[in-house]
Image (tube, rainbow, N blue to C red):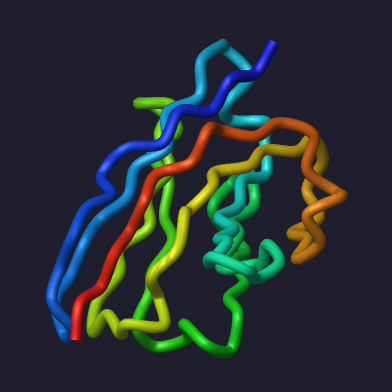
Length: 124
């Protein structure tokens, strides 16, 4: 059983930074491709970033390229999302997701395991 748990959300001013963490229980973390998605009020859930189980391949939404960095530490069973130069439009609940297989997918349906989400609020 895989259970992702997010942490690190909060309130930050525009231009600031936050780092989100996602811990996933179990011995199989290093076999999982992981992703971050977000959902703003009144909007559909959207892809943010994803990283292959080995860390060798990453993918980003155009809206966060150059500002966000996804990484993972398989020894700690943890994935990270470093968010810099935050904008008010980044305000959303951020979800960690996990899937089997090496394909780095931007589609939420590809991910079978989801965390409860962590709120990120960027004030202007």
